[in-house]
Length: 247
Image (cartoon, rainbow, N blue to C red):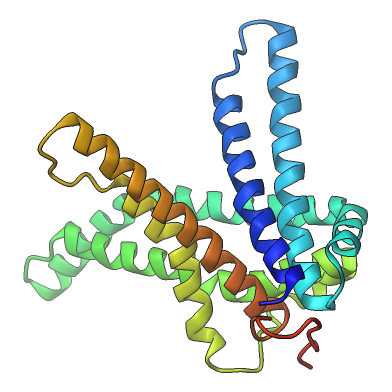
């Protein structure tokens, strides 16, 4: 692994930890007065901008084979379209979350209709389970595949990068790699942190949580960086100082 790549890994290890701390601090800010409300808004805006800058620069660094300083300057110049892309993705996933909360109603109606037509009892929980599987596939497989190239393109090219929506990597293996790495970046770390194993004492519980938290964080950083490499450059840069962008 070359020095620029090691610098990128170190930057993510420290930068994402700082972002998590900033997010934790923001959750604790009060909103009872106007000044504290404005301060909370300023911290939230700073958190969003720094997050977009760090991860946008990562896509630029991988996709354009540029140095870290050049990548950050490019991401800073394209910060506004990156923010627009981030909020657009957030809006899509919020709508998907709303659908997940609402899906119990159509599941009940469909189960009733099928029971009437088939003259056999169809449980609403069965239909709801099917809805949940489809929603899960949309959240982790169907939506990320076209959105990731768009985010990478916006980080590198600004507003023109929105045309990269749906421009998937030519390698068929990417269709499998991207969802797996995305699950390892977010879904699996959250599951790992939320898992509460049986421990013999309070000290063991603390040690278990600390170990799971550390492993989840390292898994997130490693998986997300590898996903950025695969999305922007087609392969991880491990042994070369420069990367040729895949056509």
